[in-house]
Image 1 (cartoon, rainbow, N blue to C red):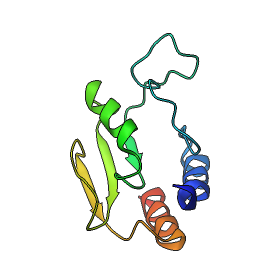
Image 2 (cartoon, rainbow, N blue to C red; image 1 turned 90 degrees about the horizontal axis):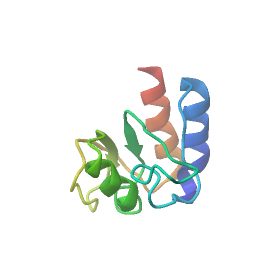
Image 3 (spheres, helix red, strand yellow; image 1 turned 30 degrees about the vertical axis):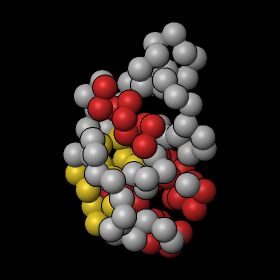
Image 4 (cartoon, rainbow, N blue to C red; image 1 turned 180 degrees about the vertical axis):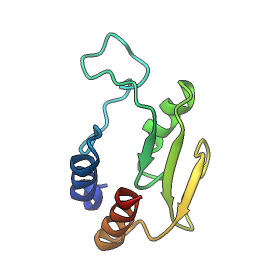
Length: 102
């Protein structure tokens, strides 16, 4: 989702974590031959409806998933759902700000 890219970048910058802010390349968590292979300890998804590929791959390799969930979000393979509005740029930025503060 394009509205959350800047918030994800700022969150990663302030917490010292790695991020995938643009298009997610399938196989990033499962294909070890791939150049962009990652082994994250946690996946934070802005929208489970749009981020279904990384959520599915994280379930294959047992990575816990935290997702910002709206009322229409599918919660398959999501471990912790944070109920919030994930459609607006300001609400996504607020949620990442709250996570960075904790």
